[in-house]
Length: 308
Image 1 (cartoon, rainbow, N blue to C red):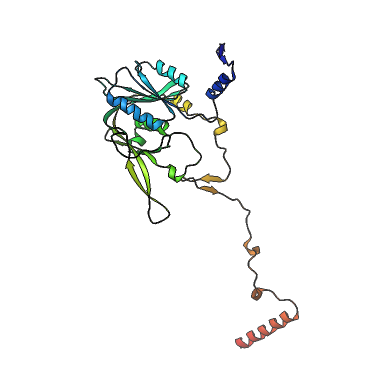
Image 2: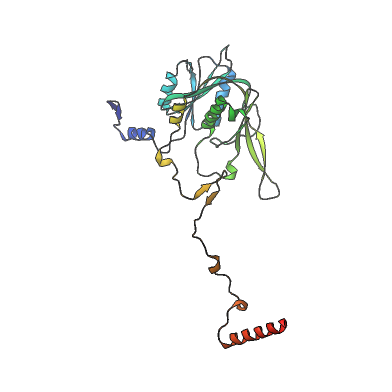
């Protein structure tokens, strides 16, 4: 590929396919994540990065070499690797005396850091420590967030959005019931964030709907919130902007409730109930001719007799 006046022109078909894959699309590719460790790490951080990589595969890249960088002070190396691997998410692990067992979750917009949140590991159980059968690689997880902080505190709101982006996996049109077997549960309580990973088991219940049980498969983390680097409201709004082609067109007289049920409204002309066609019955049918007239006279005579 050759670059001329800031525009890269491919020379081969392979290079053209590569650039087409990197080009902007209406529906973007699955978000890839870079998982890397800093210049100084501990065994806890190294194993935690490997376990999170196992949850994120195959949409992740694990760097085994150390990267001497500090994301909160200089993020140029992260932006360089992001452009190289076409990744919009990253996880950086480090360890020092001031901030031991440190994990930094972050995401990028247009290959520039959008926001970063630093979490400290206080307690950790790895995948190998929990002896239960695991979910297959690439299973799309169900994300559950519990705690009032995720709805009221600004830092926890952004952390919820960041974790959803990081773990949600590919967007699929439909999911079968048996495929819903991995659950990631995040709880915000008393200044800490608890992350647990479960496998849902479908048991017999005696009816059509199965009974569901949760079995912990790991990894499990007890996090404490440390430093944050959040994007401004204008930049955050720009990053979430959708093209007009993807915005659903509004249809008149059609609405949806909270559960997605579709409702329609019908507009009809004013009806005259006197002319409303009802069910025909022989007893109510009007008679015509002399028989009807004779019947009318006899009925009037009988009425007069009753009055006298």
